Structures are given as structure tokens and as C-alpha cells.
Length: 204
Ligand SMILES: C[S@@+](CC[C@H](N)C(=O)[O-])C[C@H]1O[C@@H](n2cnc3c(N)ncnc32)[C@H](O)[C@@H]1O
Image (cartoon, rainbow, N blue to C red):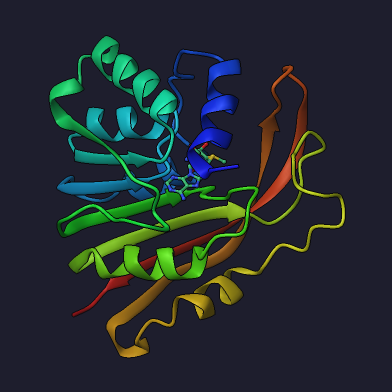
């Protein structure tokens, strides 16, 4: 099945509104930054993009799912920040938005099918302007309701960084660390999960 079809099915069956809440790591790591141009990869229903726009960022928000992008655009409209978010449809394995950004974020940019995630994250790093940041947040443990198999082995932050093949002299590692949080599942259930955070600053 095509990536867009997989994700459209998921979003068509799920909630049509934004949670109104940004991801925990996003809010913690981005809050101290001065707002500028930001790119979000895998924006889903727009929770993070709307929050970032409210903080003053000028957003480009990307997803493969046209259904998710429709929901996200309506949420941006309802939040009064539609003029600060440009939504773009891309299958990031095939195409990437134009431009250079002060902040690039990719939170839980996971997908059930095989795809060149390391190459996509490497391309994301190329889109960071000198002095800017990239924030990648990814699963480091499996929530009980996850679609990933029970025996899934999650890469460490360092392993993900290695797949990106960045020039070491160009990047400062501000954080390569696991963080714990309480996650809420689709039926309102909760569990403690671990995420990995890669927060890097481009030096040149
Ligand atoms: C697990 S969800 C995470 C959504 C959100 N960023 C969050 O933090 O909750 C992954 C998102 O990435 C998108 N996605 C998956 N594969 C993609 C691809 N190849 N190109 C663009 N978006 C993709 C999905 O449509 C989905 O919205």
C-alpha cells in the first residue's frame, strides 16, 4: 500500500481536531529560541505547527497525508494562525520542501513501511540555516497500543545520528538524550514511555 494511503486511512478514522498541545520535547527545547522560519516534517493534525506559529515562528508544515493536512489547516484556521503556516504535501522519501530554516523539527517521523528515514533526516539537516537548529524526537520504547511489533528494537539517539552522516565539524550536539513522558493512547489509556531527543545546532 502507498504511504499516503496508509496514513490517510489512519487520519480519516481518528479525531478531526487538534489536541491543542505541543509535544513535550518540542515545547522544552524550542521555547528558549528566538522565533524565525521553521519547517516541521510529519506535522499530522498540526498540533506542533499551531503551537510554533503561536510562539511567532513562520511555519512550513509538511505531511504525506492529505487528510492530515486538511485537518491541520482547519485547526490552524480555528487557532487564528493560518496566515503563519504554509502546509505542503510531500512524501519525504520522494520530494522535500524548498528553502532554508532557522529550525527544522521531526517529531515521531516514523512509518510502518520501509523507507529511507536516515536519508530524509540528513536532507532535513541540510535545510537548517547556519546558526539554526534541528530537533528530532523519536520513540525509544514501545507504547502498549503501538502498531510496531512487540520485539521492535529502537535505535539510540547516537545510532540515528550516525545514519544522518553529518559533517562533525558543522554541528554542535546540544542534546542526544532519552527523556521519559506519560503518553496517552487512542482510547485514553496512559503509559510511561521513553523518547530519544536529538537537538543539534548548525555552526556553519
Ligand atoms: C507517528 S506520526 C507523528 C505525528 C506528529 N509529528 C507527532 O509528533 O505526533 C508520523 C507522521 O509522519 C507522516 N509521515 C510518515 N511517512 C511520511 C513520509 N514519507 N513523508 C511525509 N510524511 C510522512 C505521517 O503521515 C504522520 O503524520
